[in-house]
Amino acid sequence: MQIASVQPFILHLPLTSDSISDSTHNITHWGVVGAKIVTTDGLEGYGFTGTHAHLASDRLITSCISDCYAPLLIGEDASDHQRLWRKLARYPALQWVGRAGITHLALAAVDVALWDLKAKKAGVPLWSQLGGARTDALEAYNTDIGWLSFDLATLLEGSAKAVEEDGFTRIKIKVGHDDPIADIERLTAVRKRVGSKVRMAIDGNGKWDLPTCQRFCALARDLDIYWFEEPLWYDDVAGHATLARNTSIPVALGEQLYTVDAFRSFIDAGAVAYVQPDVTRLGGITEYIQVADLALAHRLPVVPHAGEMSQVHVHLSYWHPASTILEYIPWIKDHFREPANVVDGVFQRPQQPGAGTTPLPASMERYGKSLG
Ligand code: 0YR
Ligand code: MG
Image 1 (cartoon, helix red, strand yellow):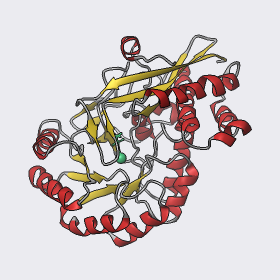
Image 2 (cartoon, protein in one colour):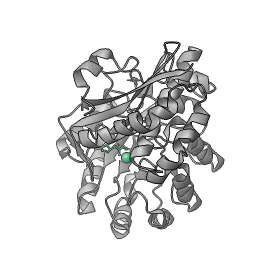
Image 3 (cartoon, protein in one colour):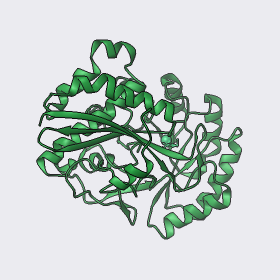
């Protein structure tokens, strides 16, 4: 399974709404930025990271793939993915310019493509290749109903539909107004609308400072918040540890962390209850497994962030023993050979060989961007 070529691509796919905001981002498209890796025996592996569809920065990722990683990969045996991960991640000149950020997002894409090849070569879905499914029913929680940019009527209507018609028992609502009272009012209305049995998580996307978070948590005491995600700035280990000590609401984080070392710092500090690794920001599946194993050793639940819109994490969550539930945002499901599919609040277990990352040719054609 020798690597014959590494071909980067950029897709900008429209969302299910015209645009959405959380407390720190506003987007109209999801960027699927990655590589097709072709082997001499004719197999095609696909891997990608997730971006906010900003073409100039997407091109930094594809140029890292084609100019820096491809020359290190061509001619190598694709099944040596563990060795190849180290070759790319520890390559001296590249390690010097990036142990996180663009080089790591590019590494994620390449690593996922190698795992996709491994499972395709074996002729089985990735979860099976990894060691088999731990459950028959992986529960989904719906993030797409809870954007901060939605007015209250839209938020209530979407939450009610998700629960009453689509079978979700779990939802996540974005928070982060300048005055947290505005968020408390929205959450109180949602809780009243969906009832006490629905699990309601919230996500601050790193905007508030510690006093604001503490005030919010005191005001939210009666809302039965399942977790408070990214309450503080992404890298603030001490701040999250202080907040975790001072509130009964469990802290969730990890979607902005690039390395297993970063996760270790948060876990060692007692700063995280729900561990949220993402294959698209860590160095792919290889480093995700290290984080999930670390969480398992600490008896902490793993709830991946879905930067690939659940295409890969559905496999990992069906397999890894520390997994619990998985985020659902249906932005890219019309564009893949085997889309992440939720029925009655449960992710269907993938059946096709590979990691679920193969895009449809028509979508590549229609939404593909020039690499510049
Ligand atoms: C928009 N999920 C998240 C969206 C989402 C972000 O930037 O990507 O809100 O990834 O925090 O938990
Ligand atoms: Mg989040």
